[in-house]
Length: 595
Image (cartoon, rainbow, N blue to C red):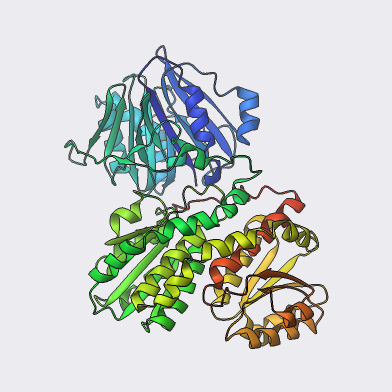
């Protein structure tokens, strides 16, 4: 994953400080290098290098570059090792053109070989470098920058969001996209491009969303968009209701802990979507005989909870398919199937490909946190979660917001007024769970030694166990596995040994008795049991080595919305004990837009 930014100011102020500020806000997308390119006095100026943003800035002073427009990039290596030469922006050998690119060019090798045979000289190992060479080739043939970019994207195959500048056309940025996110911001002081809105919230909240293949031209006078046939396109401007402060830490040490603490608000705000969700249900044909969730990662766990809810409350057969595996099940879709796509970003590549397939046969619904994202524009129906911007790579508040949307959908579908009433209490239950934050911090220190963790849950708590294990893996780098507790004797029990931590999720309800039996199984084999259960569960307090208690009113049906909170906190505080940065886990990025 990478992040790109572009900006052209209406005045003659230097743009580099703004570019640096904007690109710094895309750290969460994952990166190993940073670079900026600006234009001034018939020259493209470039500063770039591998390393953390602060380290590179301390060495190069990235804000000190001339020119009132430019482009910037944070790179996560795909083709070529992290290095200064492989960092973006990339240029042609004459430095006439500079380009930043997010995505993968699949046919770059054959293009590169042809360009080399024509006399072009390459310096990097990246796929991206073919782009400025192609643009330079076409501008030399007499095409302006816009049409040189258009001819370039006609040749390259793959995914991309591209922004380019040229010394031959000063005061202009040209951009386009295919299967990679790109937004255009209209601000009081200038015009902006970015991979995601948090980058430019401080400067522009009026946003345009370019479609696939459209060409965007920014200059000091405004923004022009052309379709693939060169026709001007009138784009609707949407105003993002997120404030710049929402994308800042606001006194917290990390975005992750800030976002954990914002979960009650995320649920309250998402509950306001009740009427909209009822309208969707009213509009969906009553002939729906099957529901299919499609998702990845954390969203997959939310979907599993949705399966339990819809099948138990509404009696509609429900499947959950990983987006990357969807194509192997696509032939089972028909016009009686509702396919629900869940994605925090709305730009997940696997989910978008699956959505295009599902749209051919079935009704589609997107549950997405980012307004204007690709899923919101391509799904037939959309539920907008109200979590606000989530910067931490490990999903927290977007997970509970997704769950809240799913719970509302299931309860309204089943006309279950009791569950709808219980959902109104969930924000208070989450706030209560967060009151134990200091206690959870101390407990987490006792489990810092572990190399392996197991998480057990039954029924509605099984997806919660999976999510708890995922949070642990993502940010602590400890091996964690979530299991349906009844599966212990089918393999996992062989791995339970003296001192192995086992997290047992045991809310009150029908599954409690059997979960307690599974607790006994691991306890008798020497496991250290950390239980999460009801504050009035005396049996659990007796059997577990440590226990984190939850309000007894939280039954097993709504438990996934509340019991996940201590699991997030456990992962967060163990990560701090190990000296890792929970906001920037190694090898991971927030929005995966390549397969």
